[in-house]
Image (cartoon, rainbow, N blue to C red):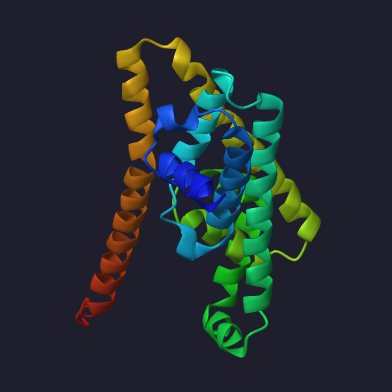
Length: 225
């Protein structure tokens, strides 16, 4: 049993399509994929897991008959939503820590009200966009756990964004077998590279913002007339 789990894990990690076509592997694929998606959506240390490409691969496996779409797609949605909920609960727990409270008290009240307003008005967009950025996928619901008081509103955002994310990526994977081989490989490589590109863009944006803030802070005051 352990060897079978290891084989499926390795096949998912390296996108070994032929190995995943082995008879009897469907049940293990369902379980392992659900666990991977849940962990990566809920815990920051699990960010390196290749969950975007795994969701695409699940769509492809469903298209060729290895998996059942009626089981695979809802399972992915549940796993992603439960992961976001776990990250949300981590935010609730962190909000009770005195150290976190001291950090929040240092932020100007006006800025915190702006953050709260953005989370209320654009929570769905934030969660949906975060699902395409490794690491941020778990940070955004964690921050919502710290600031958003209405849990039902968060669950609405989490489930709807998870549904859109799964149907977009798994739907692309479902269509891949019908594409010409060259185009299919190009699309697959693009999807695998997209999370890395978005993560690098987010890091570069954060660094640029920080450098500009430091430069403005070090700017000498204008001479008095």
